[in-house]
Length: 429
Ligand code: AMP
Ligand code: GLY
Image (cartoon, rainbow, N blue to C red; front, side, top):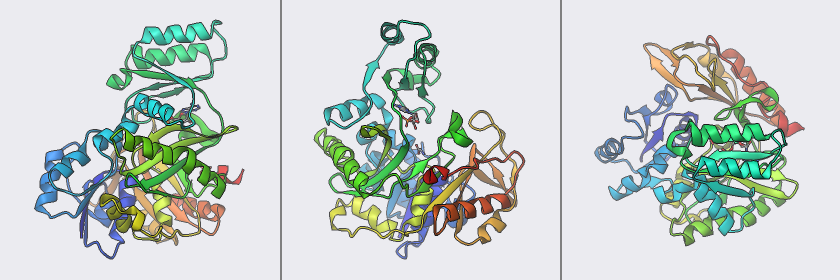
């Protein structure tokens, strides 16, 4: 078989590595890929936005199926375009990807389906949103536990968690006034601020049958102890001890099943990876957001633990026969992924720094270094993004996996490289 993966991040490197491991697969191509996918697969210099170019490549090379990794091409309808050209593709349609592409669509669907989520109001107009806050929180320095969200895609940055009225008004101004996130701010949501630990529950579905994957936990804030600005994710581990079998059953019954049914009823059957970002509140698990793809970096520890053949799962979803597939086996050992980032990330950063020590890290047992923002330059691997590597290890315990991941991190160097030092510590709290 020949498989094409679209994207260039750590998630896509993990997908390429796992799909390449299938005995049924001969060639894996990644468009456009990074320096890591250049080693584990074959890079093709076509950007994810070039639908015609991807279709042409898939046809000319007799690709058996395409896996679309990131949200932007899914929301832009790449899967629809591939399918219209007769190419099999894994991922939701443009209509189904609205679940991530529009937070207003997502919240309305959750409300309709009676799925637990924070109370919310939607606004088209900054003035209305400002009046809403001022009416409810009369005192200028009143505590104001709300979250202000831009409706559209904003690379994880369009969500502003507020404590007081000033912060809430500022957030509205950034999204709907100065339009920091562009068209993503055409509409905004103000919602109740929840509290509790966060978990990512990913499920693979063909629109009818749901295969829930082991729970994972991301680390979104940049610095240790969850301090600092939000990032795309500074590390993840899997599984999470706070989600036991009873909690999984509850999440399936109260969240995943009703959402899959509601999508089907709204004639947007969801096929692909349904990612529920949840907060485990005192009143039970509630939805913060839905994503329509594998999480990055959650995908890296998840796939490191998957023992079954990912290709069998993907094909069962494409063909709508997930109900006939035996559930895959998982390595009982936990996995931890530590993201190494460029100096300055999630703000501005420089690229082109030469990375050393990748060979030494790769020699360590039970370690896989997934590349994210890397590129090949002459004989070197250089930095090419904010999140550069996802150093992932598996171990007998979470502590052992963590220790091994950081052992590998210590082998890898470039000027300005940094990472959080506490990835997975929340599991031990
Ligand atoms: P999202 O992109 O919607 O997952 O939001 C990014 C981060 O903002 C989440 O990981 C949470 O830490 C935080 N967040 C989002 N919604 C809420 C909420 N209703 N209450 C508290 N924190 C939230
Ligand atoms: N790790 C969070 C995300 O993929 O959106």
